[in-house]
Each structure stands twice: as structure tokens, then as C-alpha cells.
Length: 331
Image 1 (cartoon, rainbow, N blue to C red):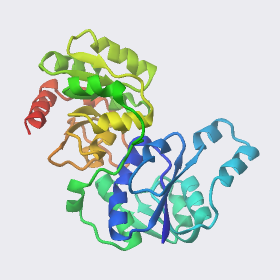
Image 2 (cartoon, one colour; image 1 turned 120 degrees about the horizontal axis):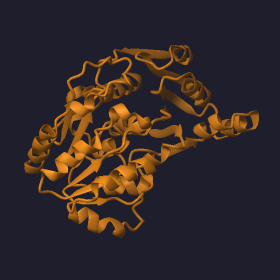
Image 3 (cartoon, helix red, strand yellow; image 1 turned 90 degrees about the horizontal axis):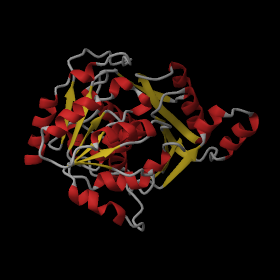
Image 4 (cartoon, rainbow, N blue to C red; image 1 turned 90 degrees about the vertical axis):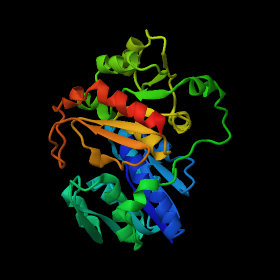
């Protein structure tokens, strides 16, 4: 059987959604193709559980929308190829893509869905609440669609499911990887300031721990913020990396502490010791286990629509983060 997964964006959501891959292969052994926005799709390259990744220039199309570019995007899609397609994105555009490439059935979410009209293109949909754990929600959708069983307890020990180019040399990262104790991810997905733990509080953590820190950044604003922390002798700044190198780097980390954002979830996917900070979002976005700790601010969350004006992440005390770093380091 040939199946396709349609999840177009964003980086962290794709990484968490991809947790379904080991379970699909283990239960069905079918051929799996993933269809994604080319801006994020590189994170899926070299996954041991994926057979193909189709990368669509959707973000580019938004910037330059015309008939020629629409036709080009459609030309990248194999029409009526897949026996079953699962749209785990829940947008009208993702549902249309799923319908176009399917020769059989299209399944998707109901209840928790981005654009409710997308469900009109599904042969069958499955209901979930906003409050349901996100990773469980993805996995249960696929289990119900493909008719295998899964329980939330199965998600506490997911094997690593991402990969990186095995033929590339990564020697340029060896010194940092050998030197560091903790990698800090200071950025936040989609530029949400409400997801970012303030730099002055990271500084408090760095000053009060006799550990070596590497600061991971993703854009020029974050690089400038990282440079504010580099005045300390126990801090170094990571170089700019592409997605492939980022996956390698995080897969070799001793510990990662970061905001609710893509690189933090990449570390989580490799089973690295990870602490994730939640302010306007909630700990139900990750599965906690012996290697993963979610720290949530004291704000009350609307699970169906996160509040970008909720800046409560700054109320998470550095002391609490320090305690959890030391706890994970001792495990």
C-alpha cells in the first residue's frame, strides 16, 4: 500500500507529526510519502521511515501568486497515486492537495481543525478536542485511519525518527559538542515574542550554573541576542546551520533547553535530554518522559487559540529552570 501524509508547515509541527512514522512502518510496512512546504521539508530528509518527500514552493507562491506558478506547483504533485492520504494539517489547501494525489480515500481531523471547510474533502474524519495532547492527537489520527492500535503509553519511548546526511563531514562541530553541557535555543517559531524566554533571564541561568552553554540562533535578531550572552566565559555561539547540520548538531547534544519551537522539538525527537518552556502555549504540545521536562508559566491557556499577548513565560523563574537542568544532568 502507498500512503501520503500532507502536513505543510511549520517546522515544530512537522517534527511532532513525524512521530507517527515508526508506528506506521512497524504496523503496516507500507510505502510512505510526505508532502510539505519546501521551506520546512528538509527536516524530513534522511528519515529512516520515509520513502519520499515532495517539496512544494507554497511560501514562494504566496509571494508571487499567478497562474504559471500555480500550474508549476500542481506539476510537482502525482495525481491519483496514493491508496490513502491523511491530511493532518486541516487547511483547505492541504485538503485539496490530499484529494488531488489520492486514488482512494482521504482522512483528516474533525473538531480540532484549522479550516472547517477542509473536512468537506475527506472521506472520513475523526474528532479530537483542542485539549488533547498534540502528539497523541497526531498518532491517534493515523492509527484510526490506518487501522492499527496505539495508546498514549506507546509514545513515551518513541525511537528517533529523523535523520541527517550520513556521508557529510561534521568535524566543524566537534569542538562545540565536546565542550558544551547545555545548548540553549533562544528563538521562537513564527517570531512569537510571547514564546521567547527573555535574554536577561537566560543570563541569570548562565551566571548561576557552573556549566558550559552553546547558544543556538536562527536569524539576525536572535544572533544579536546571543551575542549579549557571549560576554560570559562559559558561553559560545553556534554557527549558522542549515536544517541538515542542525539535526546532526542537536542529535549529539548532551542537553537542550529552549522555547516552544522547532529546534527544541528536533532535539526531543532524537531522545536528547530536553527542557521546554511554555508561556502562551501549553505542555500538552509535547510528550514528557524520563528525558523531557515541560515547564509551564502560571497563565491559563485557551487550547483552541493561543494568546500571542500572553507574556507569562517571563514569569518562569530561572531558579526552576536551573533545578531542572541539574536534575536532568544528574539522571
